[in-house]
Amino acid sequence: MNDAFDYVIAGAGTAGCVLANRLSADAGVSVALIEAGPPDDDPAIRVPAMVAKAIGNPRQSWGYSTVPQRHVDERVLPVPRGRVLGGCSSINGMVYFRGHPREYDEWRQPGWSYSDLLHYFARLENYEAAHTPQRYRGGPVNVIDIPNPNPLVGRFLAAADTLGLPRCADFNGGDPEGFGPRQAAIRGGRRESGVTAYLNPARHRSNLEITTDALVTRVMFEGRRATGVEIERGGVRRVVTARREVIVACGAYGSPQLLQLSGVGDAAALQALGIAPLLDLPAVGKNLHDHPAASIGARTANTESYGLSWRSAPRSVLVAAQYLLFRSGPLASNVFEANGFMRSRPEVDRPDLQIIFMPAHRNANGHWLPRGHGYGIIFVNLRPASRGSVTLTSKDPRDKPAIDFNFLSAPGDIDVLVRGFEVARSILAAPSFVPLAGRETSPGPEVRERAQIEAHIRQSLVTVHHPCGTCRIGDVVDTALRVRGIDALRVVDASIIPTVIAGNSNIPVNAVAERAADLLLGRRP
Ligand SMILES: Cc1cc2nc3c(=O)[nH]c(=O)nc-3n(C[C@H](O)[C@H](O)[C@H](O)COP(=O)(O)OP(=O)(O)OC[C@H]3O[C@@H](n4cnc5c(N)ncnc54)[C@H](O)[C@@H]3O)c2cc1C
Image 1 (cartoon, rainbow, N blue to C red):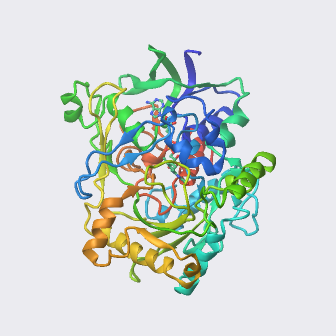
Image 2: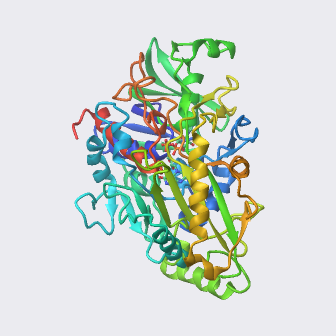
Image 3: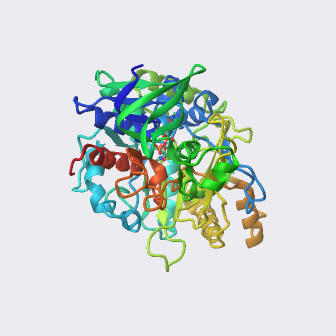
């Protein structure tokens, strides 16, 4: 590896891959992309329906979990996070969603409104079925409508119709409210990740160097100017110099961790751990938030759902053959094929509740492949008010940070989930599901009173993996994503997002990184 580059990017996740491509497109600059994890060579990464297997592979995960969640029965929640080339884009659910336009406008940060970002949503997208003025072709990220969704999806949407819940034809077409099929980042039956969309087309460039299995241990400074990073690879530590800028793209947990390890954070807390503070910036690591969710599930003898059973074994053989021969069929789907965005109460001005349909049941033992048949609904609070933090547990960069979402600490957060539970149960009780003769197994029909429902929510609460806000614009970085008070250091990833987008976060992060690349190169959109 060379020792000096114009730009050094720490972290090759969603944002890092975008930046590596866009910056190195200028042959006049040199770029180093440094990733802690291995190359993305696990076959489960490629096959969309094997997403749960990819998430569960410890070789490509940080293995994080939360601190006990005070308002969630003191539970310690697992926090999957990609430690692999492509970061979370290599293990995520591939759901393609820009988010509600008003979410961006409410950040109230110049240059980051939805209309400012629309140019970047257009630049990144290749929607195979683009047919309206708001949708685009020609970008690096391929987007599809799942060609043959599971038959249960039709039952889910029919149930929503029965309940009078409106339809949404295109969740990325302007007003994402209502129920309908989701779109996915899939190309030719394979996952579209940051690697396939952005890195692979740029790998051949002589001005881009990609290094994997290298932990960035701290940012190096001269005074208050970032000059490079220290990395640890194969037990050896060395410094990589940045002639122009260091870009921290380590994600919502990794970026505040790296800043704090480098002396940028709450000075008193850093001193207590034996880290010499460079800049007292207490907001680093604060404002952590994510979407809390819970679920309801049913088992059935009907074999329409995704899953393995003796009765569906012949079909499973055909499904495997179909994928191997044609890269199509159920294995080319990301499984969660339909959802709804709705308001939990009439008074709220836009959707705050997501109702995600699961055409499969979950194994009690957590195995990625559903054994037997079933279906269920995950209901998500899209605009939680609870806020937590990411803090260091020691000055050793190899130690995991303390991740505290402080879920359900804001009193109203559980109300949205209770409403989600009620909607989910009504959907599964609708006439379209009756022929399946499903039996609710989680939580079970005996759970009816509000207190019981709340208890179920606390027992089954999970994150749906959209953490953000820990280096938010306004507090930690300015509107050009420069760390306040420090020269030549930017943060570009989900951590800069001040308020989580109501929906999935990969495409919002792509758009953030696309705009950041223009800011770095001094280009106007
Ligand atoms: C299980 C799961 C499912 C998801 N499903 C969806 C979905 O279906 N649709 C959607 O839109 N979003 C989804 N998301 C969210 C989405 O993938 C993330 O919001 C997005 O990838 C975040 O991008 P990022 O660049 O901020 O961080 P990341 O992609 O996490 O990238 C950070 C990178 O930095 C590396 N890194 C961290 N620290 C260091 C260090 N010290 N040195 C070197 N490298 C370091 C990490 O290994 C990682 O590769 C999901 C996320 C998860 C975890």
